[in-house]
Image (cartoon, rainbow, N blue to C red; front, side, top):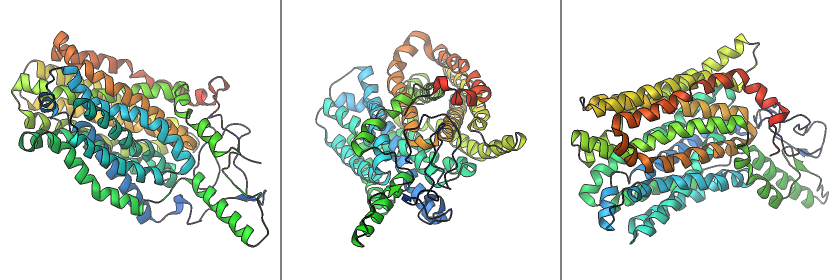
Length: 504
């Protein structure tokens, strides 16, 4: 019996230690003990199973992914401090176009996951990491030598697409290697790259651009990512169980042919029964189809709204701190430290609390671990976000000491990261079999909002001022506060309901 396309329902999987996912009614993993032609890992302690890799091998893999994830958001924000110089160089005074030079990169994060996620589920994660890190380097070189604004924007888009790979596949890589009960702590280590990157970019760009010019912002990214590219190309190993078992199946088929026994009936325990072409056409739409699930859609909408506030801050900090406090490009970049430090605290908080809270709730409810046990942490982050927005907006509006709005952005950064991490863990735990695709769905929605909301930042502050403009964002964040409570109570029922079941 082969595995058919799954209708994701949240029913728990019992297939070995690979933690490969969740299957719907009637959709069970193939049992190698029953079918001798099924190729699976050799027992629960098979060293080829990524769950059984040595701690050093796991740490090296996660370290490479984390480093790539650090460079991705640095690339997105490093141009924010150089935007004025870029516009002057190309003789443009359009404020919206100035913001677009930065946010077009995020449109790459919208487009990239739609292709990268299904490709990873067909050909594995390692090859995509290798190809995309090299393309990321090359497209940043192209940005550095671009001789027109149009070319710069085009290469920024392509660099964004390439850089979306670790953002899209990182959580799936962690799910391949780390069991549920230890996933939040490891996720915290991985997310540090995503946390520090957005804050490092404006600081580096703010001090580098006045000295060496805006082109060196892109040269620096290309030069710094070169050693990482070499390490990834040489040492990144495949971790996706589906691909590992497909390769093992192909190897065993070749061996049986050499022995002239020719057993062509051998097939992977995770085989879907589809050809590569059928699988690609089937999976390429999976991230978009998953947005039709109410849980994925609403959780992604929530994280997208909160995440877009981060990039709105990056595009408006030079204006706010320049007009309100007289900061230059360098000090305006340093203003992002509040967001960075707050985000870092949010990572440590979520990483240390989420696993323990999930285990505690499971213990109180019969021992069964449910994805919904991740959601109480989301509520804590959700409360921090509006507090940070109101604090930042009105401290800047009243021109209180410059440290006060920066402290406010610290609350925003902490809330944003707690919300993002807890929500991502919830989606990955709920739809583990499609971790890359559900992450792609979330990334698609999140970066779509982050690409376009900042374009309205200057107009919003012109109309409402810093205080009321930022308060508007805070009120929107308050509206989302009941969402984690709703899914905590009804999430499992929604996931298991036939009414919300979609074929993937």
